Each structure stands twice: as structure tokens, then as C-alpha cells.
Image (tube, rainbow over all chains, first blue to last red; front, side, top):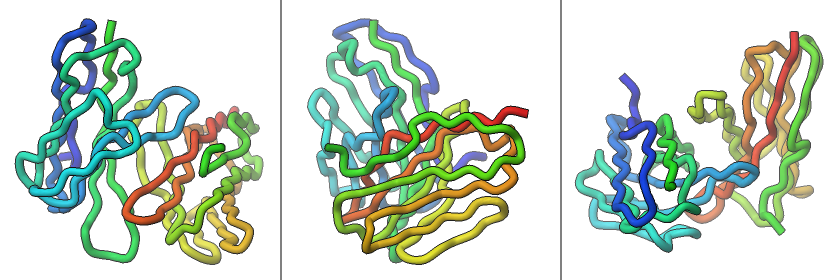
Length: 114
Length: 107
């Protein structure tokens, strides 16, 4: 089984709808991240969490919110989806220990907002 | 100006060719990562390095901290190497990603 899973894998929705993307991990990592990927752009950080009680905004957090329900679960919500939130969304995890921030990615969720 | 610049953006090679992808960055970093993204979308880490050179199979990554530059080399390229290769720099607790290089290796 995959160490980092995301649900759903694909979602088509309409403008104004509330959407939740879920991420679960079995790696036992403390740190979790949400990114979005757009064609021609690098992955951009939306939110990150270093433990259950820690939530931090990334560079593009407007229009998004997150919830860290447990060490293993980190959800991303779009309260009122808009078309420019159409993108590929990735969850990632990393270990609190170690010298460097090697991140392990989920398979991605392709979101289309009509 | 992007903090991480990759070149080329697109690269087409014939099977067997030696391939080089470059990454330049503008900030002080603690490490640089090379990642691979396959057409299905999944992203995997290839290398993490803070100095010198690392080799894994046909892949070699080098970094020059003074020049703020890294290269990823693929020797004896194969169609299965076709993917997007992403450079990311680590500073603070976060990664900053380049836009990626789309590599296609033709047989």
C-alpha cells in the first residue's frame, strides 16, 4: 500500500461549491504539506503543518483552509471553489528528524472547477 | 524573478544520449533536491545534496554552492527516463521548486 494517499484522485466541481481534499500517511511523519501545481509553474506551497497543533500558511493560502485531524491526516478545503483553483494538488510528508527536508508525495488530486 | 530557474524547459533526446538538466538558484540554501514526476503525476525524490556529487545508477547530480548551480545528468538515456525533472531548494523549513524540465527520450 502507498505510504501517502490522497482522495479523491479526480474531482470536477462547480464554482461556489465547497470541496475537501484528504491526505493520509502511514509513514509516521510529523510534517505534512499541501501544494498545488499549475502548468509551467513549480509546485507552490498552500499550507503546512509540523504537528497536530501547528498550522502555517504557505505562499498561496488565500481561498484555502486546512485541518490536521491527527498525525496521519491533513485535509485541504476550498470553501467556495473558483475556476482559477483548477490545478493538480499534492500532499507531502517529511520527517521532523534528520538533516534535510526530504519530502514524500501523494499521487495527486486533479481538481477541475467549472 | 523566480528563485529557482531550470533549463531547458523542454528537452527531446534520442535513446542512448547523455542528458544534462541545469538548475540555478538565487538564495542561500541548506540542500538541493532533484525529483522526478512521471506522466501519471506521481513525484519521487531522486537526490538530496548539499555539496559535491551523488550517483545512483545512470543518474548523477552535482552542486556548486559558490555558483548557486546544480546539474542532473542522465547517462545512456532510455525512453523510460521520459518524465518531468524538478529541482527544489531547501531553506528554512520549506522547499522552493523550479518549474520543471520536460524530458522525452525517443527510441
